[in-house]
Length: 86
Image (tube, rainbow, N blue to C red; front, side, top):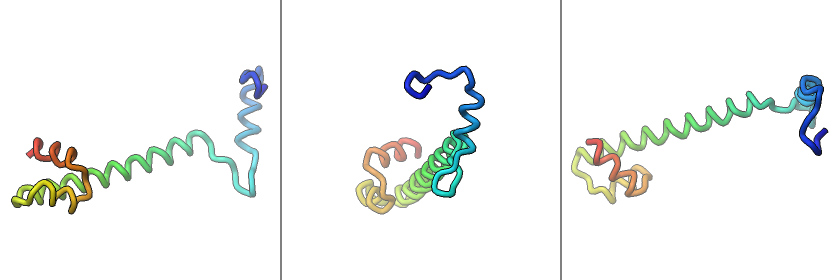
């Protein structure tokens, strides 16, 4: 079954996988894994947005794009995108 990737009893197979325990902890389901990855991506995106907003404020105060890039921890290409939004 694992070699060919097909089973007539898919529900049973996935049920066994779902219920199987490894090291005392239940295996993470695909839904849980996707949710975790989605949360991580959302957090990363939120941090990026905060950095961009910070860069925008610094640029509006007249700070050089190089200094803004260093302060906001963003690449110059990202600073250029922020400049185009102002």
